[in-house]
Length: 222
Image (cartoon, rainbow, N blue to C red; front, side, top):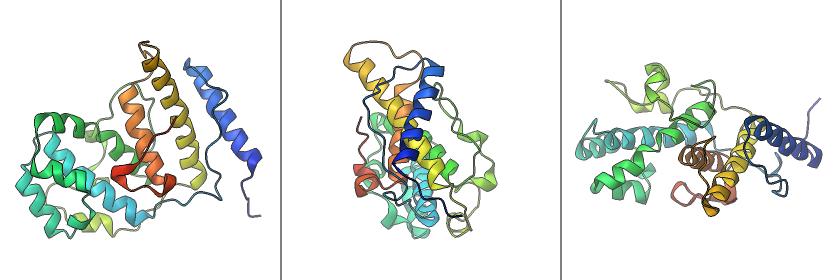
């Protein structure tokens, strides 16, 4: 029987997230509403996710000084991916200052979330320490060695269920609120890392096409 999610399902998603926060000792705002229902949500397609994570993986190599910008630009153009590079990413590629590299290095967390959505990694670990992309097997990673990025992009990827992605989006929405609340009140956030939470929330909001925003414009409202 086809299950259609209802207001009750969303309430239980919110309650399930709050139970997790309670267990983890993260502050809860019980007045935060539930997020979009499954009917209201359009997930990005597997091809969209694969193209986005491939571009992110290339820019991430520059952030860690693994390749130089000209090489990255050629690689993206040769792979017919230049049109998928956002204006902010193009700005980074053309002028990768140390500050921009530092900022871009956080996108490891976005890469991890998108690979999780494509079932290339199994879990979104507790957000208290940075993920290590070296833990992703080479066959599950979009770039590296002599591999053609389009082999990854054109492969038949399975996207996680709408329900599973919305569960994560709801949880990270509430994590992010706790981080913002701590910052506003000049409290140290000891349980979770606000930077990790923000990047994962960002990628999850993109995955659920939150407010139809493109990658550079994704907002993480709390």
